[in-house]
Picture (cartoon, rainbow, N blue to C red):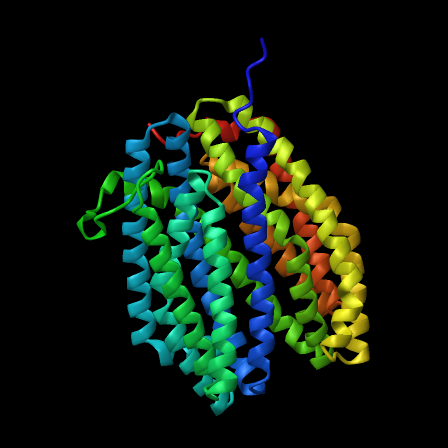
Length: 447
């Protein structure tokens, strides 16, 4: 008699839909946030753009660390070992709090020198706005880190609706706070940063409050009595650090590519900036499927069902492909209206539309192979292979090829996407071989 699958279609839908909605909402609200700040003036939007390049780097590192801990939680959940799941959850909160507080102190103390080192000599008003914006966003690091940890713990126990609801309320608070503080009180960049800080404090408080409630598999309470467990922390860092390095490499690569794009002139820079936003929106829902897949694979492996882990990676890869194709077509249809509403110059709008057309054609063919199976393999503990493959491919193709085409061949911003397409294709081919080799199943995450 055939063994029943661990997750029914109804269970998968309940798990994935909130994650997808949360990712979409965050991307859309981030775009609205940027548009609101842009009304303050060029110095403000420049400052926010520059500082957010640092913020994204740090926040993605926190997110990867939290995801590493969640892999351990989900595998214990698959074992039905709730005691160890609770123990690992407490250590995730402990280590991410300690690291985020350390990063906050370092950034606050070295705020001025750090900004000057990274951005060099920028205009005085831009640097002043950057210092202000960085001050408040750095204060928010521990809160966004705690939220990421808490949200990951909830996802590990198949509760994705809770983080989604918190995220919805937080984003509404952020946008409302921007409107009040920027336009109502004329606080400019400081108003945008304070609104972000308050929304992140809200997220952290609510997620910690929800975690201490009874009648759920993982309950974390008496936070001040949590003490470090070296063995468990080592496991969490062993999964989280490689993923954090991988995410950070992508952000560093984006910054490095931007230096080449900046040589192409304002028309190309504007076209590339808008294309980046739209390309991110086209794939954000598929990324949500990947995040949900980590919980599914983690539980399958915790239950000792390697066959189920393979099955669900295949199944959710198909789901993500459908979601991705839908997202690409919707974004393509909206590109011209968005460029018109955004007031883009005719040449910038033309270049943006051309790049999005190529993305719509190529991305559904190669993107899924490069990303979705890797989410599942990371949940099995195969994080170092993913880090090395993604890092080498990104620097060789996404960066080096892009720089060569722009600086040596005189190509425009389309060079960025040729490098991107090559990166996706090579990485997808390597991950496909890795997946079929089944070597990723040899890792042992928990005892």
